[in-house]
Length: 354
Image (cartoon, rainbow, N blue to C red):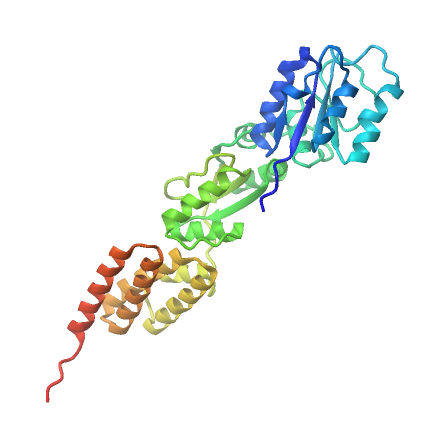
């Protein structure tokens, strides 16, 4: 069952409406939260304590202090229950924002300056500012943060070192950071890799898997790193940001799915070893539900078998592709391929004479 979106209740004076709207817009771009703005505007007969009590049905409250909302004299007895004791008892997360030169009660925490929009957003996301969060930051990183951490977007960096520093500084602005090694890998391999990182089992073709991933990412605040991207940018929109990182990636030399894909892209050496790797890759991709990658391996195997006129491999790879096409509801393609396979097989059958 999908969790309900948490609610943030903003408490503010009518004179601070523009500031409240600015805060709400910034938070909405970077946090999965439902913001109650109109309900939080103080009426002439209300004060911040009374408005904060109305927030107790929400998960979070943000109280804006200003000369317009803070009484000149406000004894502790008038606000302590509403702003401290009752939120603690009700499990309400509450934070405070200083909007001008007013002087809020010092015991209230966390207290943010109105200019610290990123820190406010991170509190909404469940983080507290790390030590030295207000220290000066690399200007290039700050520009990158504005472009893809404060809002969804796509950017490119000069090298992997910049990407690492950016992730260290801005990881609290994302639900998760995911990395895809692109290089010479196909769309089927890239979508299969990303789906596996998300824990998704996508058994369609590469294009439908990409569409499913785009829909999945659109509602979530992810950062996706595309390393050594050589083709067109994988289009992830919605709330997700994309960062392209240049430089070569290291391919594994093992019998994992990715290691087998690397081996199949290279020159065919020992044919029996090539066939063994393909059959192992077929088992691994099937077990993982990565059917698009299985289909791609069967295509590579079939093409290599044609050059060697290996009838058994041709038949086996074609049968596997027919089965996969049927599973994708592409019956016409499956029938055409199966007919072609049967014709090839019949042509190669030896004629028996009495």
